[in-house]
Length: 372
Image 1 (cartoon, helix red, strand yellow):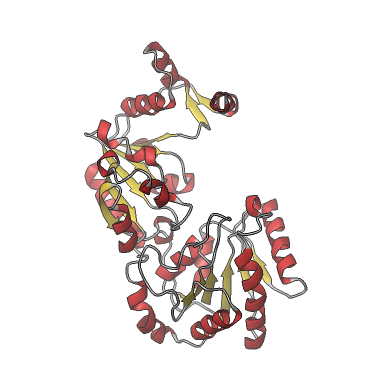
Image 2 (cartoon, rainbow, N blue to C red):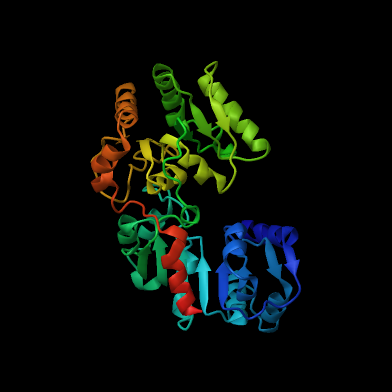
Protein backbone atom coordinates (compact mmCIF):
# COMPACT_ATOMS: atom_id res chain seq x y z
CA UNK A 1 0.00 0.00 0.00
CA UNK A 2 2.83 2.39 0.89
CA UNK A 3 4.58 1.70 -2.41
CA UNK A 4 1.35 2.32 -4.30
CA UNK A 5 0.81 5.66 -2.54
CA UNK A 6 4.43 6.67 -3.15
CA UNK A 7 4.10 5.89 -6.86
CA UNK A 8 0.83 7.82 -7.08
CA UNK A 9 2.53 10.74 -5.38
CA UNK A 10 5.32 10.69 -7.95
CA UNK A 11 2.82 10.60 -10.83
CA UNK A 12 0.86 13.53 -9.39
CA UNK A 13 3.84 15.75 -8.51
CA UNK A 14 6.10 15.01 -11.47
CA UNK A 15 6.70 17.28 -14.43
CA UNK A 16 6.20 15.57 -17.79
CA UNK A 17 8.20 15.64 -21.01
CA UNK A 18 6.37 14.81 -24.22
CA UNK A 19 9.16 14.69 -26.80
CA UNK A 20 11.27 11.60 -27.13
CA UNK A 21 14.77 11.84 -25.63
CA UNK A 22 17.37 12.27 -28.36
CA UNK A 23 20.25 9.94 -29.03
CA UNK A 24 23.27 11.40 -27.22
CA UNK A 25 26.89 10.59 -26.50
CA UNK A 26 26.42 11.14 -22.77
CA UNK A 27 23.55 10.21 -20.48
CA UNK A 28 23.57 11.68 -16.98
CA UNK A 29 22.03 9.32 -14.44
CA UNK A 30 20.13 11.60 -12.03
CA UNK A 31 20.61 15.34 -11.77
CA UNK A 32 22.89 16.04 -8.82
CA UNK A 33 23.95 19.47 -10.04
CA UNK A 34 22.53 21.14 -13.13
CA UNK A 35 25.10 23.90 -12.65
CA UNK A 36 27.91 21.36 -13.15
CA UNK A 37 26.37 19.87 -16.28
CA UNK A 38 25.42 23.11 -18.03
CA UNK A 39 28.78 24.80 -17.46
CA UNK A 40 31.07 21.95 -18.46
CA UNK A 41 29.21 19.85 -21.03
CA UNK A 42 27.72 20.80 -24.39
CA UNK A 43 23.93 20.49 -24.46
CA UNK A 44 23.98 18.69 -27.82
CA UNK A 45 26.14 15.94 -26.30
CA UNK A 46 23.96 14.83 -23.41
CA UNK A 47 20.56 13.82 -22.07
CA UNK A 48 19.49 13.63 -18.42
CA UNK A 49 17.74 10.61 -16.94
CA UNK A 50 15.78 11.78 -13.90
CA UNK A 51 15.46 8.89 -11.45
CA UNK A 52 13.57 10.49 -8.55
CA UNK A 53 10.29 10.94 -10.39
CA UNK A 54 10.66 14.72 -10.65
CA UNK A 55 10.48 14.53 -14.44
CA UNK A 56 8.89 11.67 -16.42
CA UNK A 57 8.99 11.17 -20.18
CA UNK A 58 5.57 10.22 -21.57
CA UNK A 59 7.07 8.92 -24.79
CA UNK A 60 9.12 6.40 -22.82
CA UNK A 61 6.11 5.45 -20.69
CA UNK A 62 3.99 4.83 -23.82
CA UNK A 63 6.76 2.65 -25.23
CA UNK A 64 6.74 0.62 -22.02
CA UNK A 65 2.95 0.19 -22.00
CA UNK A 66 3.01 -1.16 -25.56
CA UNK A 67 5.51 -3.79 -24.38
CA UNK A 68 3.51 -4.51 -21.20
CA UNK A 69 6.31 -3.27 -18.96
CA UNK A 70 5.38 -1.16 -15.94
CA UNK A 71 8.20 -1.05 -13.38
CA UNK A 72 10.54 1.88 -12.78
CA UNK A 73 13.42 -0.42 -13.65
CA UNK A 74 11.78 -0.92 -17.06
CA UNK A 75 11.55 2.86 -17.39
CA UNK A 76 15.30 3.23 -16.71
CA UNK A 77 16.24 0.47 -19.16
CA UNK A 78 13.94 1.80 -21.89
CA UNK A 79 15.35 5.30 -21.47
CA UNK A 80 18.95 4.12 -21.74
CA UNK A 81 18.19 2.10 -24.87
CA UNK A 82 16.42 5.08 -26.44
CA UNK A 83 19.31 7.49 -25.81
CA UNK A 84 21.87 4.85 -26.80
CA UNK A 85 24.76 6.72 -25.15
CA UNK A 86 28.44 5.92 -25.30
CA UNK A 87 28.75 6.66 -21.61
CA UNK A 88 26.43 6.95 -18.59
CA UNK A 89 27.72 9.29 -15.90
CA UNK A 90 26.43 9.77 -12.37
CA UNK A 91 27.42 12.08 -9.53
CA UNK A 92 25.34 9.88 -7.23
CA UNK A 93 28.14 7.54 -6.25
CA UNK A 94 26.02 5.88 -3.56
CA UNK A 95 23.43 4.29 -5.87
CA UNK A 96 23.51 0.50 -5.76
CA UNK A 97 21.08 0.44 -8.68
CA UNK A 98 23.52 2.40 -10.87
CA UNK A 99 26.24 -0.19 -10.35
CA UNK A 100 23.82 -2.98 -11.27
CA UNK A 101 23.27 -1.58 -14.78
CA UNK A 102 26.64 -2.36 -16.36
CA UNK A 103 26.03 -6.11 -16.60
CA UNK A 104 23.06 -5.47 -18.92
CA UNK A 105 24.72 -2.78 -21.06
CA UNK A 106 28.17 -4.14 -21.72
CA UNK A 107 28.73 -1.90 -24.79
CA UNK A 108 28.17 1.30 -22.78
CA UNK A 109 30.75 2.80 -20.42
CA UNK A 110 29.54 3.58 -16.88
CA UNK A 111 31.24 6.28 -14.82
CA UNK A 112 30.58 7.25 -11.21
CA UNK A 113 31.99 10.34 -9.49
CA UNK A 114 32.24 10.54 -5.70
CA UNK A 115 30.33 13.67 -4.75
CA UNK A 116 30.72 13.90 -0.97
CA UNK A 117 32.63 12.62 2.03
CA UNK A 118 31.53 9.12 3.05
CA UNK A 119 31.10 8.12 6.68
CA UNK A 120 32.00 4.79 8.23
CA UNK A 121 28.61 4.35 9.90
CA UNK A 122 25.03 4.90 8.65
CA UNK A 123 26.15 5.78 5.15
CA UNK A 124 26.90 4.10 1.86
CA UNK A 125 29.50 1.46 2.63
CA UNK A 126 27.48 -0.36 5.32
CA UNK A 127 24.85 -0.97 2.62
CA UNK A 128 27.50 -2.49 0.38
CA UNK A 129 28.70 -4.77 3.17
CA UNK A 130 25.19 -6.22 3.45
CA UNK A 131 25.51 -7.58 -0.09
CA UNK A 132 27.85 -10.19 1.40
CA UNK A 133 30.70 -9.52 -0.97
CA UNK A 134 28.75 -10.09 -4.19
CA UNK A 135 31.32 -8.06 -6.10
CA UNK A 136 30.40 -9.46 -9.50
CA UNK A 137 26.88 -8.12 -9.05
CA UNK A 138 28.02 -4.48 -8.97
CA UNK A 139 30.35 -2.89 -11.49
CA UNK A 140 31.32 0.26 -13.36
CA UNK A 141 34.01 1.10 -15.86
CA UNK A 142 35.40 3.95 -13.76
CA UNK A 143 34.84 5.42 -10.30
CA UNK A 144 36.49 8.79 -9.68
CA UNK A 145 37.16 9.04 -5.96
CA UNK A 146 38.40 11.52 -3.35
CA UNK A 147 41.61 9.59 -2.68
CA UNK A 148 43.48 6.31 -2.57
CA UNK A 149 42.06 5.20 0.77
CA UNK A 150 38.43 5.38 -0.38
CA UNK A 151 39.39 3.79 -3.73
CA UNK A 152 40.58 0.75 -1.81
CA UNK A 153 37.27 0.66 0.06
CA UNK A 154 35.28 0.78 -3.17
CA UNK A 155 37.37 -2.03 -4.65
CA UNK A 156 36.12 -4.39 -1.92
CA UNK A 157 32.56 -4.24 -3.23
CA UNK A 158 32.44 -2.88 -6.80
CA UNK A 159 34.34 -4.12 -9.84
CA UNK A 160 35.78 -1.03 -11.53
CA UNK A 161 38.87 1.00 -12.31
CA UNK A 162 39.25 3.62 -9.61
CA UNK A 163 40.92 6.95 -10.34
CA UNK A 164 41.70 9.47 -7.59
CA UNK A 165 40.84 13.10 -8.40
CA UNK A 166 39.53 14.53 -5.12
CA UNK A 167 36.27 16.49 -5.14
CA UNK A 168 34.88 17.23 -8.61
CA UNK A 169 33.36 20.60 -7.61
CA UNK A 170 36.42 21.62 -5.60
CA UNK A 171 38.68 20.91 -8.58
CA UNK A 172 36.76 23.37 -10.74
CA UNK A 173 37.84 26.34 -8.59
CA UNK A 174 41.49 27.33 -8.79
CA UNK A 175 43.37 27.56 -5.50
CA UNK A 176 44.32 31.10 -4.48
CA UNK A 177 47.44 30.83 -2.31
CA UNK A 178 48.57 33.57 0.05
CA UNK A 179 45.23 35.36 0.12
CA UNK A 180 44.35 35.13 3.83
CA UNK A 181 44.30 38.92 4.37
CA UNK A 182 44.52 38.39 8.14
CA UNK A 183 41.24 36.45 8.25
CA UNK A 184 42.19 33.90 10.84
CA UNK A 185 39.52 31.30 11.58
CA UNK A 186 36.47 29.85 9.81
CA UNK A 187 34.13 27.20 11.20
CA UNK A 188 32.19 25.20 8.59
CA UNK A 189 28.57 24.58 9.49
CA UNK A 190 26.71 21.35 8.75
CA UNK A 191 23.30 22.63 9.74
CA UNK A 192 20.26 20.78 8.43
CA UNK A 193 16.71 21.92 9.22
CA UNK A 194 15.62 18.27 9.34
CA UNK A 195 18.07 17.61 12.21
CA UNK A 196 17.32 20.69 14.28
CA UNK A 197 15.49 18.73 16.97
CA UNK A 198 17.90 15.80 17.00
CA UNK A 199 19.38 15.33 20.50
CA UNK A 200 22.49 13.62 19.14
CA UNK A 201 23.35 15.03 15.73
CA UNK A 202 24.46 18.46 16.99
CA UNK A 203 25.99 17.35 20.28
CA UNK A 204 29.45 18.19 18.91
CA UNK A 205 28.46 21.76 18.00
CA UNK A 206 26.91 22.38 21.43
CA UNK A 207 30.19 21.48 23.13
CA UNK A 208 32.69 22.66 20.54
CA UNK A 209 31.40 26.12 19.59
CA UNK A 210 31.51 27.74 23.07
CA UNK A 211 35.07 26.43 23.47
CA UNK A 212 35.94 27.68 20.00
CA UNK A 213 34.57 31.12 20.83
CA UNK A 214 36.61 31.22 24.05
CA UNK A 215 39.71 30.30 22.07
CA UNK A 216 39.04 33.14 19.61
CA UNK A 217 38.69 35.57 22.51
CA UNK A 218 42.07 34.59 23.96
CA UNK A 219 43.69 35.02 20.53
CA UNK A 220 41.84 38.28 19.86
CA UNK A 221 40.35 37.02 16.61
CA UNK A 222 36.78 36.74 15.29
CA UNK A 223 34.76 33.55 15.17
CA UNK A 224 33.43 33.22 11.62
CA UNK A 225 30.81 30.58 10.77
CA UNK A 226 30.17 29.64 7.15
CA UNK A 227 26.55 28.62 6.72
CA UNK A 228 25.33 25.71 4.67
CA UNK A 229 21.74 26.82 4.06
CA UNK A 230 20.32 29.49 1.74
CA UNK A 231 17.16 31.63 1.69
CA UNK A 232 14.94 31.53 4.78
CA UNK A 233 16.79 28.46 6.06
CA UNK A 234 19.90 30.60 6.51
CA UNK A 235 18.00 32.72 9.07
CA UNK A 236 17.00 29.57 10.97
CA UNK A 237 20.62 28.40 10.80
CA UNK A 238 22.01 31.65 12.18
CA UNK A 239 19.44 31.65 14.98
CA UNK A 240 20.41 28.09 15.90
CA UNK A 241 24.04 29.08 16.37
CA UNK A 242 22.94 32.16 18.32
CA UNK A 243 21.18 29.87 20.79
CA UNK A 244 24.32 27.79 21.23
CA UNK A 245 26.65 30.78 21.61
CA UNK A 246 24.08 32.88 23.53
CA UNK A 247 25.41 36.43 23.92
CA UNK A 248 28.80 35.63 22.44
CA UNK A 249 29.43 37.45 19.16
CA UNK A 250 30.18 35.66 15.91
CA UNK A 251 30.15 36.51 12.22
CA UNK A 252 27.70 34.41 10.20
CA UNK A 253 28.37 34.06 6.45
CA UNK A 254 25.61 32.88 4.11
CA UNK A 255 26.30 30.06 1.70
CA UNK A 256 26.99 31.05 -1.93
CA UNK A 257 27.59 27.85 -3.93
CA UNK A 258 31.02 27.85 -5.63
CA UNK A 259 31.95 31.01 -3.68
CA UNK A 260 32.48 28.76 -0.64
CA UNK A 261 35.78 27.53 -2.07
CA UNK A 262 37.07 31.03 -2.71
CA UNK A 263 35.98 32.02 0.79
CA UNK A 264 37.86 29.09 2.32
CA UNK A 265 41.01 30.32 0.58
CA UNK A 266 40.77 33.62 2.47
CA UNK A 267 41.22 32.06 5.91
CA UNK A 268 44.37 30.85 7.64
CA UNK A 269 42.62 28.15 9.65
CA UNK A 270 39.56 26.03 8.89
CA UNK A 271 37.67 24.22 11.68
CA UNK A 272 35.22 21.42 10.90
CA UNK A 273 33.66 18.19 12.17
CA UNK A 274 33.16 15.90 9.18
CA UNK A 275 32.01 18.32 6.49
CA UNK A 276 32.80 17.58 2.84
CA UNK A 277 33.87 21.22 2.45
CA UNK A 278 36.28 20.69 5.35
CA UNK A 279 37.92 17.80 3.53
CA UNK A 280 37.96 19.90 0.36
CA UNK A 281 39.80 22.60 2.33
CA UNK A 282 42.53 20.02 3.02
CA UNK A 283 42.91 19.52 -0.73
CA UNK A 284 43.22 23.31 -1.04
CA UNK A 285 46.29 23.20 1.25
CA UNK A 286 44.56 24.90 4.17
CA UNK A 287 45.50 24.38 7.81
CA UNK A 288 42.60 22.53 9.43
CA UNK A 289 41.49 21.67 12.95
CA UNK A 290 39.20 18.64 12.86
CA UNK A 291 36.86 17.34 15.58
CA UNK A 292 35.43 14.09 14.22
CA UNK A 293 32.99 13.34 17.02
CA UNK A 294 29.71 13.40 15.10
CA UNK A 295 27.05 10.87 16.10
CA UNK A 296 24.22 10.69 13.58
CA UNK A 297 21.72 9.08 15.96
CA UNK A 298 21.44 6.63 18.83
CA UNK A 299 22.58 3.75 16.58
CA UNK A 300 25.79 5.55 15.70
CA UNK A 301 27.95 4.75 18.72
CA UNK A 302 31.25 5.01 16.87
CA UNK A 303 30.78 7.87 14.46
CA UNK A 304 33.26 8.26 11.65
CA UNK A 305 36.87 8.92 12.69
CA UNK A 306 38.86 11.54 10.82
CA UNK A 307 40.33 10.31 7.54
CA UNK A 308 38.24 7.13 7.32
CA UNK A 309 38.72 4.71 5.63
CA UNK A 310 42.43 5.38 6.03
CA UNK A 311 43.70 3.78 9.23
CA UNK A 312 45.43 6.41 11.37
CA UNK A 313 45.82 7.12 15.08
CA UNK A 314 42.70 8.14 16.98
CA UNK A 315 44.19 11.55 17.77
CA UNK A 316 46.80 13.57 15.91
CA UNK A 317 48.51 16.93 15.67
CA UNK A 318 45.53 18.66 14.02
CA UNK A 319 42.61 16.34 14.73
CA UNK A 320 40.86 14.42 17.47
CA UNK A 321 38.05 11.90 17.74
CA UNK A 322 37.58 12.71 21.44
CA UNK A 323 35.56 15.79 22.41
CA UNK A 324 36.93 17.31 25.62
CA UNK A 325 38.06 20.78 26.65
CA UNK A 326 41.71 19.74 26.79
CA UNK A 327 41.59 18.04 23.39
CA UNK A 328 39.83 20.98 21.74
CA UNK A 329 42.39 23.49 23.00
CA UNK A 330 45.29 21.15 22.22
CA UNK A 331 44.26 20.83 18.58
CA UNK A 332 43.34 24.51 18.14
CA UNK A 333 46.65 25.73 19.60
CA UNK A 334 48.66 23.26 17.52
CA UNK A 335 47.11 24.46 14.28
CA UNK A 336 47.00 28.17 15.19
CA UNK A 337 50.70 28.26 16.10
CA UNK A 338 51.88 26.19 13.14
CA UNK A 339 53.37 27.94 10.12
CA UNK A 340 52.31 26.89 6.63
CA UNK A 341 55.76 25.44 5.95
CA UNK A 342 55.73 23.34 9.14
CA UNK A 343 52.12 22.35 8.44
CA UNK A 344 53.10 20.50 5.28
CA UNK A 345 55.94 18.73 7.07
CA UNK A 346 53.78 17.63 10.00
CA UNK A 347 50.70 16.51 8.06
CA UNK A 348 51.90 15.17 4.69
CA UNK A 349 52.14 11.53 5.79
CA UNK A 350 48.72 11.53 7.48
CA UNK A 351 46.88 13.39 4.72
CA UNK A 352 48.35 11.39 1.86
CA UNK A 353 45.62 9.31 0.23
CA UNK A 354 42.67 10.98 2.02
CA UNK A 355 41.76 13.59 -0.61
CA UNK A 356 43.48 14.76 -3.80
CA UNK A 357 43.23 17.87 -5.93
CA UNK A 358 43.11 17.53 -9.72
CA UNK A 359 42.88 20.99 -11.29
CA UNK A 360 39.92 21.35 -13.68
CA UNK A 361 39.32 17.57 -13.37
CA UNK A 362 41.80 16.86 -16.14
CA UNK A 363 41.89 13.12 -15.40
CA UNK A 364 38.09 12.87 -15.62
CA UNK A 365 37.74 14.78 -18.88
CA UNK A 366 40.61 12.85 -20.47
CA UNK A 367 38.73 9.60 -19.88
CA UNK A 368 35.35 10.96 -21.03
CA UNK A 369 36.78 12.56 -24.17
CA UNK A 370 38.40 9.27 -25.19
CA UNK A 371 35.06 7.50 -24.85
CA UNK A 372 32.93 9.99 -26.80
